[in-house]
Length: 440
Image (cartoon, rainbow, N blue to C red; front, side):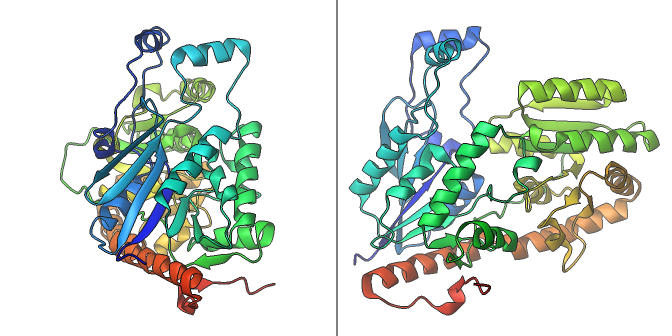
């Protein structure tokens, strides 16, 4: 074995540092048509937990990390580069067609196949070139890049699957904004991959129970997770809004936030709400109609999608409090981000959010869909600066305990080493590294 263990991360990530090292298509017709159709190129941050992991592994000397990811609008099939000891391999997804292509696909009814066989071949090609000692797939539910896992001989190659979500949860489809076609594709792929592999990474109890009960009773769960710790942004700044709701796509639960805000506004007519995130046009029309019906339009600003993680942070910091109801998420990244920005959080009770209050009250909780209870917690924050300050202080301590990136990176490094030793030398993996299904 070389001095460094070679590990391939197959994932989806983008950040400003990465984008500085990529080259992009300059198709003039595409650019003009995008302008006419009001469909600009979006080069946005994605996969903050991968960026966190990259930053930690830059200083881990005995692991050679190879990041394999799709990226939109690049001008080559594959772009390779190295920076700060990390090797990057970005490829152009088969559904990253020009605006012209998308236009004709729309009018002809032709769309790229959801099995992403082209992408799958590219990932296989990159892996064959790298020859990694261990493969770590981030997200079994993402067909754009994850299907390659079905090509891996798991008897010969250590393959670890890190869970980003759990679409096989029977409650998922009823609580997440997703089409029937997309759900069938993504959840179906997730089940195939999690049935195929032996080793999964997640500390979330509900995820493990779903896998063991509905998908793969023999799965071995390593006690590692995504690197979800957020860099704190506690600098003081001017506040322009009372509450902020934000999400990658506001379809997730902006409707719950709007209903609670309207109730809270009856007690405090002056309060305001900032809504940040992308949205589907149909959802936005329905949301606007409901806002108008409730008579709260003058108190709400909806920004739409912001480009970078820093842009989102700067917007979030303009608010005094975070209004972040959930429907199905264990604990959303937005809760962690709001805590890192020093905002007290109002959210709902899911399988994960109560864990934030196990040692100390760190967030205010109410049942999902109970708009009155959610609004009552909002009013508590508006009326009590002492409560708000206590929640912020407690949440920062809790977040550091649960999501410290450096400690999780070291755990992940040890898991990679143990997996390699198991496959290369037959060395047994330490029992405290993993958890087995005890109900078989």
